[in-house]
Image (cartoon, rainbow, N blue to C red):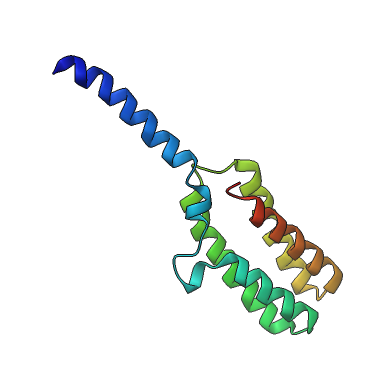
Length: 121
């Protein structure tokens, strides 16, 4: 019995760690309406294209909140650089929307969306 436990515990630990490391694509999916990052990015894109700046400011706040929720779920399975890049995109997006700069906002939104698509691959 002791020999079995000596072999089973490390194997079980390795299996658990591998499952955690490959779980990024599962955990980035929305678990509710308030953490759907991809949908929020698309909504902000529409607001910026329509120059609805007040709605865009509110959506950026919701996007930031949703992204903070997703970070907690994916922090062990994704590269820290990718998480930091998307966090920086959201911060720069907040500035571009506050300044009502359509081109910068669209640039940051497209960059954030491309980083979002790369998470979990």
